[in-house]
Amino acid sequence: MSKTRSSWWPLIKLLPVQTNFRFMRYAKLALGLSIAVSLASLAVTVFPLKPPCGGLNCGVDFRGGTVLELKTVQPADIGQIRSTLSSMRLGDVQVQAFGSPNDVLVRFESPEGQDANAVSEGVKAALTRELGPVNFVRTEVVGPKVSGELLTNGVLALLLGIGLMAVYIWFRFGLTFGLGAMAALFHDVILTFGLFAVTGMEFSLNAVAAILTIIGYSVNDTIVVLDRVRENLRKYKRMSLAEVIDLSINQTLSRTIITGVTGVMALGVLAAFGGDTLFGFSISMIFGIVVGTYSSFYIAASVVLLLGVKRGEETETEAAKPLDARP
Image (cartoon, rainbow, N blue to C red; front, side, top):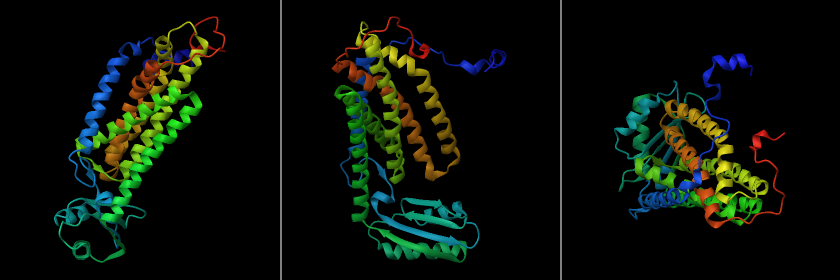
């Protein structure tokens, strides 16, 4: 970009190219606070010890219920369908449009003690009465066994995702870096579970997808920082480990912030205009980006600092200048 253009656009370089924040000065304090917050999040997620989801507000996917796929003659009025079902006191109700404007997917939880098939027929009659002729394409009752399997598989998917990411970083960077990355991933996942428990947002398969996406974002952010740490450890052998980590975080700070802000902006629009179905997904993703950025700096890097790293045998460079200035 030309010098003339940048002079009349003052925000073109909102972030400095190189910063000198001493992140590791507060490493022990940040790590201690993070452990306390993680334990609190785990407590509100698990307690009360009530199946199937403890402190989480589980949706139909994990509690069991009925799924109706219907097709209306005119474009479906989602608001009218939702209000009709809400008046029937069915508990958790999800209404989602898909495909054409006439296609709607409805999930609802049958009241306790009532026959699911009888409730389903009552819902069909109410919708037909309010909407006119309706073609019910599919009717499925998700029983407790199926919903329990979905919950188990969802948790296993999260644990497997964390494990595979940690193993990759272990082989790529070494055991110390792998332990730091795993600690950061567990921190992000537990805090996201805590968000769902505290806010009461519905925990469904969409939430599992959001957490898996957060794991991917977090490990990407962590790899950027750890890769620069490893490179600087070879380059600046006379620096202490804390100084090398501080330098590495500062060198990647502007990129990390710009990437995070871009994601938050897109998810903010999705949360505002995506409807009830995507609201929880968007909010949890925004939260995950924030804590994922934090954990890359103060969890993964702090664990590496506490455990220590064995230096390589490479020759130190002559001048300690920023990596961005290399030819």
